[in-house]
Amino acid sequence: MKKLFFAALLSLWAVSAFPCTNLIVGKKASADGSVMCTYNCDSFGFISPLSLSFPGRHEPGEMIALRGFGPQASPRLIAQAPYTYGVVGLMNENQVSIVETTWGGRSELANREGYLDYFTLMDLALQRSTTAREAIAQMHALTQEYGYGSTGESFAVCDPEEAWIMEMIGKGPGRKGSVWVARRVPDDCVSAYANASRIRTFPQAKKVDKKLGFCVVEGECMYSADVISLARELGFYDGPDAEFSFREAYGPLDFSAARYCEARVWSFFRRHTADKAAMDAYLPFIDGKFDVCNELPLWIKPDKPISVRDLMDDMRDHYEGTALDMTADVSAGPWASPYRNQPVNFESSDGTPMFRERPIGCQQSGMTMVCQMRSWLPDAVGGVTYFNMDDATMVAYVPVYCGIKRVPEPFRRENNVLTEFSTESAFWMNNFVANMVYPRWSAMIGDLREAQTELEDFYAEDQKEVEARAKELTPAALADFLTARTEAYTDRMMQRWDKLARLLIVKHNDQIMRPSENGAIAPGRHTSPAYAPAFIDAVKAQTGGRYVRP
Image (cartoon, rainbow, N blue to C red):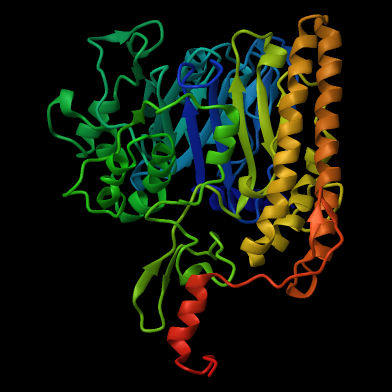
């Protein structure tokens, strides 16, 4: 039984390691002064329910047994902190959030003896920090003491005032700790990560902060003291310190990292840049032509302030309207779909190596979230995670406040089982609808968009009342109120998605389209939606005159 348990954990760790996307918005780049970060957790066969842990005081000598998400073959014990903060999802009660994306890096730096995989590290840091800077310090201290067991990883570490990006990798077998760099995203900028290392050169300090045990350039940068010296020792770098690039040393780019990973960052930046032509100048870079084009910047200033609704839409991006638009050629099929089967790499019948685009929004997402942290509200209501399970494109984001006491039933682990469909499961209800829409995208996505917008509009309006009332309630009453409201939001989503599923079956039965209004079938004659023009033209070209009418 134990063998099976750990084999399952190892399998889960392996399949969920690489495909995720994080978008990051500084407080002066947002429409309301909030700091925001996002997470699409993308992996086939992976269900990621909403987690909740309560705050608590702990006795001296109390230990934690680590059995979870990483490659460990047996339980390992680490010391518990004297006090731990409550955590909902990936945000704690102090509005500190940590999200991640894996880039792998040099395989020789993996240390399978390290106690802490990246997800455990994130969770422990959230339990032990009141600010983003504290969380980064905790991540350093924990890996120094217990070892880091994952491969190259990027983290967005945020609080209501600041957003930081942190890149970390192990030191190799037999070496505890990690090497890492963290840079603060300027308040008026946005940044992004998508499975590729992105930090190159960075501001450097004159000495190590002895109290913290790492180097600090105040307000700009933090990094492990040996991040350059280890690269020299292992032969990854031999130039001057000032020119040291973390990415070149520990996670150098190749075509895959550019086209499948940096392209997602490029698309996000392009959506928030007035000068589209300037951003299109980076197309050779994301096509892997590194010698003819500058690399993407680590962050940009957006052309206008970004709202939480903007960021939700960004998480649903498929390169629409760009040179990489996935709906505009024959591979989109008869219904102009932006979705493609996996794997990304494949071969044609004559052996030509080919690939498929990898957008931000994708069908293999286990869950999606937008974390919003607001300094002007009490923490319990200021921190909100807009959450749902499955593909961001195909779900409505549900507000989940960081001050809740219970996880809503549809988001609980026991109601979300990978091998068992249930109408009580958010994952399966979302998948039920999504998998009706995917095969007939252009005909059916409008109905989903209508339900999605209806819910998200309702939540946005209702949140105004929630946040006004929050200032009038005691902490205990506020926790009860936020829990009840979050549960009501989730129930509303489940009911609306059930209604949507029933509409789609009737409206689009047998490849026709019946008229509908306000989410219900309306009077009128059905129509037969047309195939996408690119598909029709491809059929004509392939079949010659077979289908041409005289």
